[in-house]
Image (cartoon, rainbow, N blue to C red):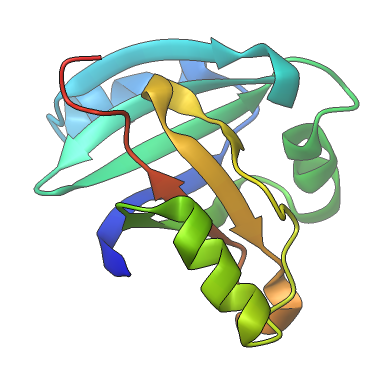
Length: 137
């Protein structure tokens, strides 16, 4: 079951260029930068109430984020919904004939497990399902 919005992903060409706006201008708590090598992306996280903003910078020209930036430019990339049981959630989506990009979870930032719903099943909005890392890990 979906519990809440976990984060909003924003595609940027440079974390270094965009971090000061969110950290210094808006004054949002900055959680640091993490690289997710298998997704060819670096992320910077900021907390806004119970939701995070996730800035996404490609680390390679063949990264999905690089391709997105080429097609659409910088801006809103996805909305991530949080669940406590990603496998069950994905099975429920499959049972409802929802098109998935990921049939099985993969590793995301900060120890989360993630999977994406294809935008054709979610009103043209790329939607991510994420299961946070267990507390203490």
